[in-house]
Length: 197
Image (tube, rainbow, N blue to C red; front, side, top):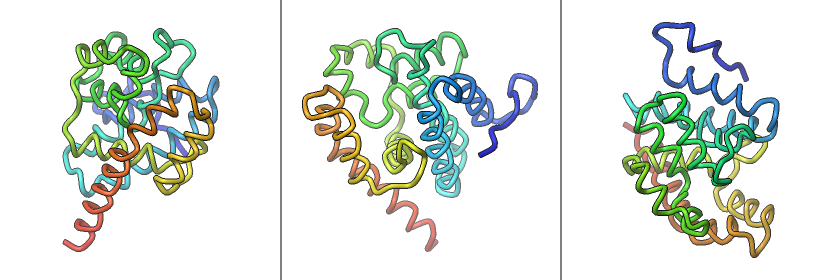
């Protein structure tokens, strides 16, 4: 998948193009599998453009950047939504809504609570509106680690088995699963309604 060229050199580049370049620089070499997942998530976000209207570019930017906090150069707390959102806010001076989407993506609050970081996360970053949050959850949780589409139930099982029963990520995913499935079903309904309108 092609990533747009350097957004810093183009005056009217979309937020998504700018985000894609940041994600590529931060993830492609050190974390190729995470980069593959990110590309798949961004591709799914582009497919939602017809139903999101003016927020389509913001969603795609968040899809490119949702896992940027995994970049070895950005790890501070070890909680990738918070580390990524802080980098975007403090270094890249990103839009506040974009930072909020990255910080709170895919029910991050549950994992933040497991890590003792919930107050920090909620004090520093405001959650996105519900439709955008559901849309990013849909894109993330219907994409495999290798960037292919997957049913949400299989994705949740894959995360559980990858981390193991007692791991805090597995615990937080178990707690988050009903909300994640609800988010995915919401976006599936929105897509169907848009297809028939």
